[in-house]
Image 1 (cartoon, rainbow, N blue to C red):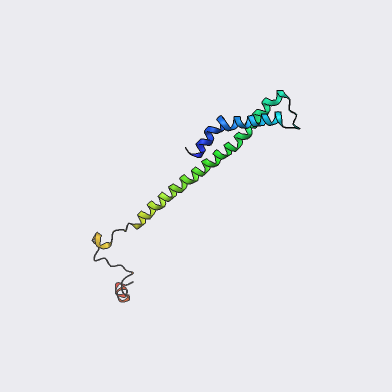
Image 2: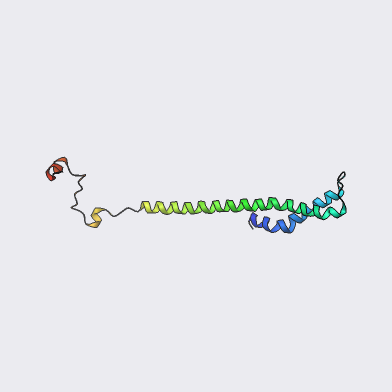
Length: 117
């Protein structure tokens, strides 16, 4: 199971209630903290929400990372495909039946003068 699935599954089922319980216990038992019994439910909810925020940020970052990985894989495949296309040589003149083709750039200077160019 991937880490993002573990976080998505365990946060609302385990981590958030555990954080709420710890916050409630701390509000009820720590010396110097005076929280009325009627406010312990709000402390529990606040503790649970504190645990949900980092989990949501983790999942957001994980999705961004997966998107970057997918984009990199697509770019690598495109680069590989482009490289294969570049390696394919175009047909040569001999293959196409242009054996007698005279390229004006390859002609000698005398041939250019005779051709009137």
